[in-house]
Length: 398
Image (cartoon, rainbow, N blue to C red; front, top):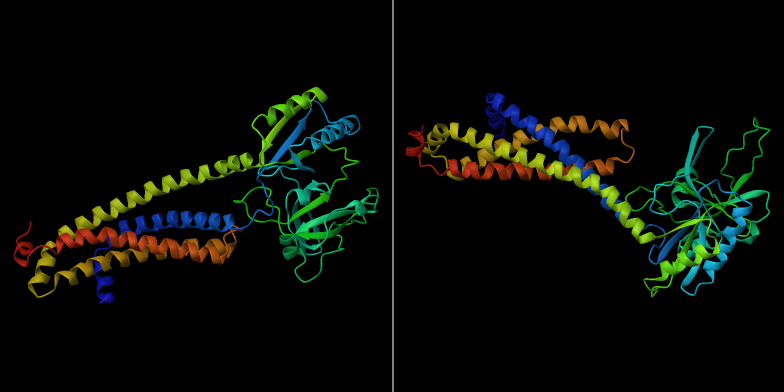
């Protein structure tokens, strides 16, 4: 039966060629939508690695260049003044803010291994303030001051990627280049492994991440002051805080931003292009559905004599209906096969790093089910109408 259907499809290859092309293009679009949807859903299920409720970032800004000596002393006074406020539960320092695309990276080649990671700086109190999870070792502490090494913390992804078969604690993760004898080179020793710190939000994949220690007492950097506030802080606290700071150090400007607001803003920036792509994809799929419906309607209308003859020879209406639907589904599968030949090259060639085989097959199956269901839906009504003719009406149809 199926070989007979394929032969009939081949005999009408010109009419079916357009349908196959439409299906192949639509399938690629549906596949892309499925990839983005499944990827983002999976990413949203992964914990951030920190808490953002009741967390605020106070940024001290200066019009000119930051002087680590004079500005650093004033910065310490600002930190001490903010810490004394009764509304502040906890306070710590952090370099690159959460939910913003502020990045610091480091990469180097060691033998045949390329090491790349995101890096950030925070003080001894930050991990507790952010409610991070320690997996191995310890957090930063006073024992890391005045050492001949730099203490660092690495996340679980860093360990899985660069130290999959060994203990990373106590290891030096920086490349010491003996050829650069004029440059002071300090080892960076891992003292702890944390679960994760997804600085860029839920829709960004997990990456190797390293924290470097900042000594709050000796810090000369202009870091963000991360404040954990009481849940019952009133609405005028922000204004009172900024007024106090302008009185303490009027030569600076200040911004006071909620982590939750930064998260919402970043999600909007990330999802808006996805939503626009989704709307465009929906219109394209609608146009393809209308095209399939129209082409199939015309196809069935031109075959009314054939349908009437088959009915006169004893074929049932349901049998003819199934044949019409089966023809379109086979045509759809041919279009899907053509699209598959092109799409399968993406994971084979590694064009997109995030498109692994698991994501590819899940997206392919989802797109396949959607496309076959759409084709069956488009074929159902025209086939039902055509088989509604009696044999005598169909044989006299013009």
